[in-house]
Length: 251
Image (cartoon, rainbow, N blue to C red; front, side, top):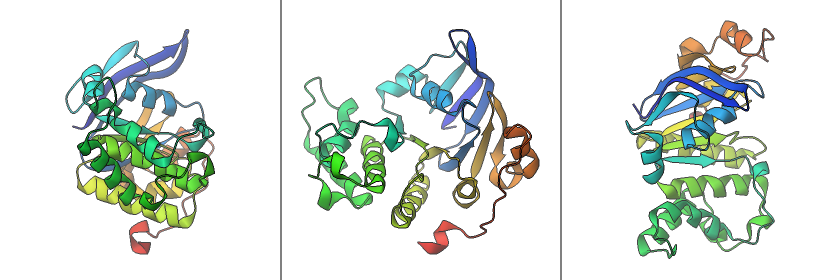
């Protein structure tokens, strides 16, 4: 298994954020993480990256504990653009090179292999020609692609993506979808937090429904039901999925 979590509990100063959550995700899958605001999605991401320590339970990435997974750079996080100070004077190339920091020495002097990884990542998100542009000048879609390239340059086995399709143009959405399918074929496991339920059916092999705990997870066709969604969203069914088309058909 690529990701294993058992009976995970996290609290902040006595306030329960995640309780008794368990899931197992294989290599080479795209998994949607669905829940209301405050349901524990961000807390689960923080636990999987090692930024918060569970009060109970355990996590394994590629069969290893979180500390070892951190050392091996096994998990990469792609934030929402809103979480990043984009006024900081760095270029696209600089941001993507940050994905290589874990593989560098203390002086963080890039080697040829680091430059190759960054160049490859930028080519995959179609930003190589803009590599010297300051990040503050980018559109929302370009910023999303920049942080996705940083994660790709890290060459992690697990990608955690926070609302990757929020606020992007159609071209960026199609490019990202195509890239996600390619990453899945290479064995990468992606856990995608999203509020857009249509993307879950279109993109995701597996879905995790969360509300302070993992209510259900498994194949999207089996778990992504109106009954489970009503339970996930506190008895208020979200808008039904209307699109039966797959993004693969438009790429």
